[in-house]
Length: 414
Image (cartoon, rainbow, N blue to C red; front, side, top):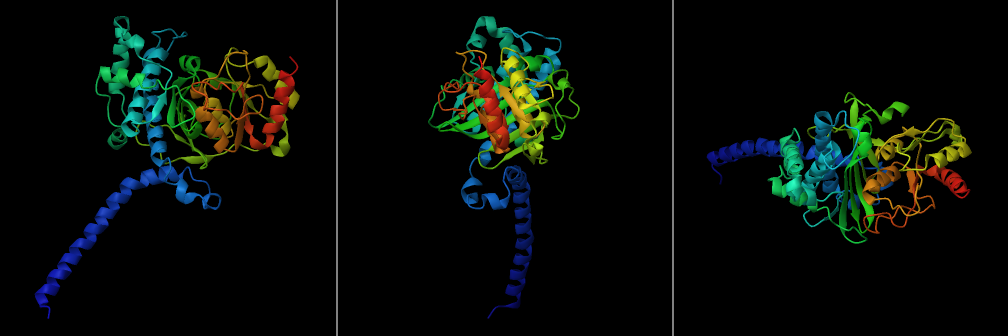
């Protein structure tokens, strides 16, 4: 028979263990909730994902979180470069601010990817050959100063990315990890550290771009757009291409295949939990006269004369909004614009996969369709370029066919 003292001790142990268990559970949830909330923002309504939820929820959760944090940290470096070095610069040469930003942002992103996914391949735009030379020492020193001093203002987020780059030599090695030739097999990340170099220099639109390909198919896409308005409802206008201020600006778009697209404010610390689903807006009654279409600022990037003819054929009355970078993809994905055209200017030019991978997925997950001018899906499995595609036509799925027809009629008139 139990003695009274045994019952007393059992009660004391229980009274101690219960609150301790509650405390442990509370700590666990407090640390896990931001990540769960982050990924929950990518989920479609329950009724559309219930059949696949068990397989989709765990997949690419870590990839999404790391990609978002990596782009957020790299965007912080690019903004430092602009404010400290780029104002008043109007050209791109081997020692220009945009070159410093390209190298620095690529090093930081690859550092995060290698810390978390060491076996993955990476297709990057830059290599460190020039920086390793004696002639490149001055440029190398400037880049290293930025890389070693740029970090997220949140220790836990910074730790998730693997912490700081060890030293200058490690930075150069990281840059050179972006040497994958791409292809149709395995896990391959594509990076464009500063997409829209002239937009960056003029204080207009540029993007820090990161995407994960698995067997040539885009699974995760992230675009950091420091100069786009945070407000998803802000309309596009002719001033968006230059001289943007920091106030009320800075947005990061993301998508996971099959789980929709999201936007959230770009911060310097932990990821904002104010993410919200985005979708391309419907064009009432299919009336194209009020549609807004985007194209590149530079005439060398897209045939602007043919774009104007296409707009006229569709009955679009608004002038085009010209802006640089994959910010165009993000803008139409959240309904600020309706159509994005990038028409071939050369028979031989091949688009780079890093210029389109993230934006392609984000638009498609927001209810859009993205093809080339022949109506073929963009094929990211052919190496470092879209070797099988010509141009880009992006629009809401319901009107994409109409837009594509107009594109083909105009191009066919040549």
